[in-house]
Image 1: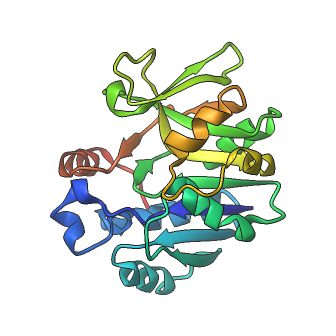
Image 2: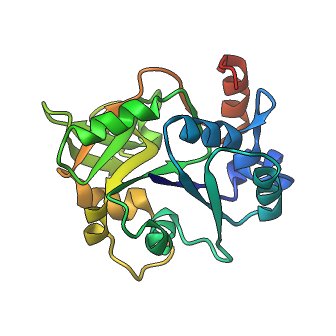
Length: 232
């Protein structure tokens, strides 16, 4: 199985930290976020990973090539940022023939069990499965509504009146039929804004019961550094 690690963001909210390193290379307990993800993917049985790059890409390439990860890693250099859905479009040839695949935002820190996510995805006949977490600030997130079968029946980015605290964790598993819902052409385009609304009623959910944090600001980075207690 293949995965896409979204790692091309500029990380402007994390300045000045990201002035000298990409956001995916921000260290957590001495290990870059990207390293945590590559190890987690290998443990989950992923065999091939595509990492998209933009800001200070050489730092990422040098880090990945300096170690043996137990999986095949390729890079997609975006000279101009494509947006997350645009990256997915650009990776379509790479994903050709895959019945299902993972898409992960590499700037998140979580103890999610990707094996359990894969099992949840295999348990239904829907186009995708979205990992969720309970947000302390739902107005700043993409918020979902679920039915009794835990299918996503509503989705709204940064709602002024959130209907729940269940938020998009930026971790997805898609089947190949997702390509029917990706409308090519618009660039940049975003999974949250442009794809997920089309998948309402066609996505299952997987709630992360343990640790999850978006490492998007110096405050969240400091909080995560105090809270993260896992061994690499």
